[in-house]
Image (cartoon, rainbow, N blue to C red; front, side):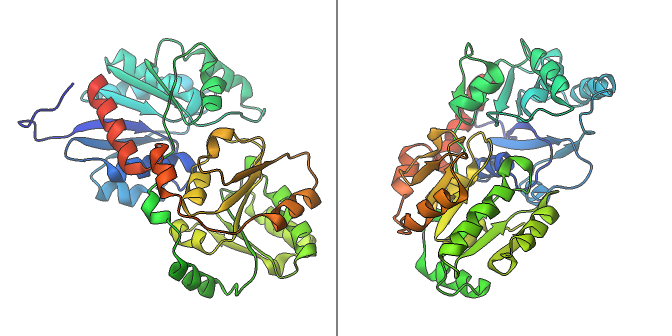
Length: 370
């Protein structure tokens, strides 16, 4: 489908997510959404929570609609399928559905196919998932995938292999960021460090939801080892989540509470990153973390777990360390790491990680396949 000048209304694309909070895939979606030519393409969102997400107000200001569905729960599949069928019957105008809920995308895209939606994109954002009580249902959803999507996207090659196997032709859509917004600025750094009261201390930064895969407990062990070598060092944690209280208790048990700042959810991550000296990210598993692209855009050296795909290293400023290494070994690498802050804008843009050019590519893709 190609829009002509006589068509005054933009083509509306349905993005499917769990809730539009400040997580990695949601931030990536908003980076693309903000840079789109919204006279040609408009995003709407199907979410699976009743409560409002952090980005909902901005979505509505930008002209997007938000449709709320119930959480996807085993035992309620039939009712959910009926609701999906009714949704597409009530909203027949969508020609592109782009689903970001990993294996559960199969259910949404099944209904979209029945409704005759021509472009049905499944997008993998994970490279691994923990085994828990829901694991058999995830495997069921994955088995239901075949034939429902007709376009396969992933944030990295590993994420594509994890969800789709090795036989699919998968498009890696970069987790692009607004490079200019994150570019290192000494004046902003001085301002934020004054606000945080960190003085000239070595500041280690981490941004992420307090969930199992982010491995905050081991991050505290690493920082304790750093703190023994450099008692003035500080750890700044931005984010929130179910495990935060437990991590706060662990910091107290390790005797490092006064050197760890829990900032909660921040809207100014680009500013906050100016205050960091190094970015530490010992996750158990990820797809391709948007926050690591942001950290590189800010010129930061990133010390990350070797569980994370090497595709993450866009600028040569990512150092991979094994999670089997001791906290003391991590600490030695951190102390020795370079805090220099080069301008990485051109590297990120030439690698396809600038949101402006990336959103143009995505818009053209939608229009071509709708």
